[in-house]
Length: 353
Image 1 (spheres, rainbow, N blue to C red):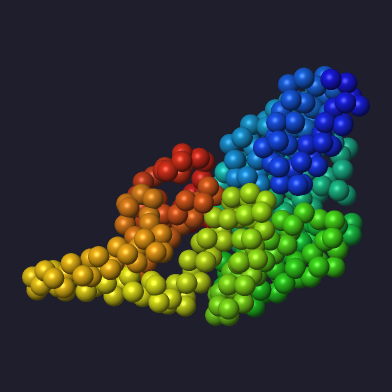
Image 2 (cartoon, rainbow, N blue to C red):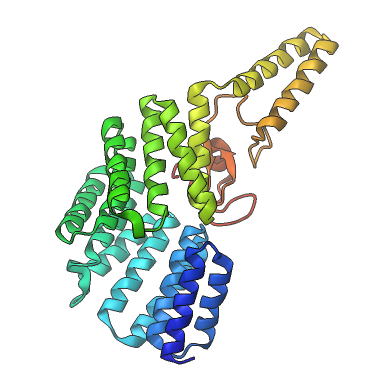
């Protein structure tokens, strides 16, 4: 497969991917990878595969393609290609919660001589480093990295980068409990999407809406939180973005818990009543509440994938993994695995979403 044909196939894959025909796009790109002889084309298609697998939540595959991309960059003996591949490797490890490795690869990016790091990719490197520091709860270093990334965005008029940084700052301020700022920055990201985002992927809108939903919930504005989360989930479902779907599911659960919704209240009521009537030996009343409890569970379809207990009957913290499966946080911590117990896909460590 020659250079021109490789370019055409990469473009064909991009068109399929943008029209939500993800599996067909992956097939086209994998065919280029198998048959293409052009190293530059090979490097580019590996970048497409890294991005696609990231958005699908397939982080181990993302890492695999990032490693192959580094080998290709070394064959090309091009510092710019090497920088880009190291950045993809940093992002892959960030998704897998290997935060120390993420920081190390980011520092490698910044230390490469004669590259575009100072102008084009430096902000993205700083953003990834900031996300890793945030994952390690090193808040001061995270803030410094986010502010550096924001300066890169402003100096280079990179509104896409600014949008991503604003979302990360929203997550940062939510964790340090400054909820006004946690809302301000995602709102700023949403403004950027409205003003400049006509040619952008809808993922930027979905990302800003999700972070707004989190902030609104923390501020007690549950109606606005629900609207933003529904918008984010709608886009995530359209684009097959499973990590964002999982985040939205967790946010929905938090909103419902904050509302004290009737369905969850009924679960608790029937659970408590079951215990009372069981102790009193009143079998008929016990049977009624057991049946109604299980009916409520079926209606809400909320179960922990590890212990099998229904979610909502007790005040327990939940954890949604990138593959969309939901568990009690305590069950994940006790299980001690780094992959999803249901589907065995690589997952984030308990405590990180």
